[in-house]
Length: 136
Ligand SMILES: [Zn+2]
Image (cartoon, rainbow, N blue to C red; front, top):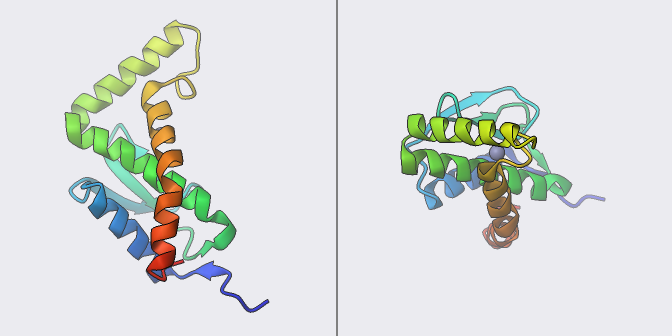
């Protein structure tokens, strides 16, 4: 079929910059690096990392793409709210707490749980908006 199967790099970057602006994390340190995930928030550096590996996004990966970016933006919002050094301490304390409770430092980490909830609650709204704007 000849339907557009990929989202172009320009449109992908536009979506990311709209999300960063909307959630007011434009001032957070951004780094581009080659990595498997679409995005990652590096708590140790207070840095939002975006993958350079994907020039385009496959349409069937839109949900994962948006959920991941919004999840990582949530960490960036926390880092902005508390200051990234303070957030790093809070995040480490939470990891230690979960380990002490015999639980998983990531799976049971409240910052991860909240970020994932936020991503899952918001991705489809953005998909609709970006579709309307012709970006998807
Ligand atoms: Zn996370």
